Image (cartoon, rainbow, N blue to C red; front, side, top):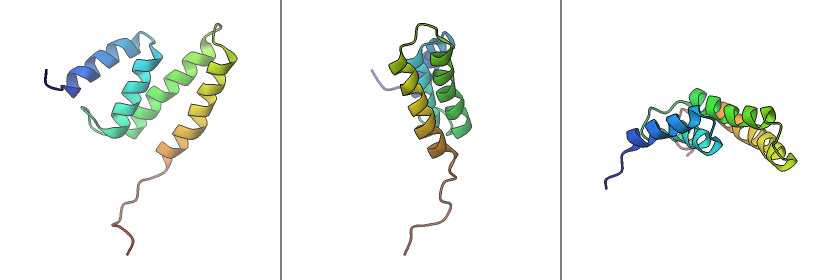
Length: 91
């Protein structure tokens, strides 16, 4: 079956809207890389932030899940916030 990124995004969004963290991560990654959707770092950050928020909101989240969420927030969000180089390679 041929790869259909737009269809994958549609199914990821359905699952992510229901609160599935793996689908939320997949959507964030998809928007960050621009696979099947236009590249949009703000939208990627929004989906990554939903994962973190859902772990903090969950009363059944283990301490490992909460610390993993904090780690994702600390490591991923600054990477996305840094503007991309807009000039050519260094000579």
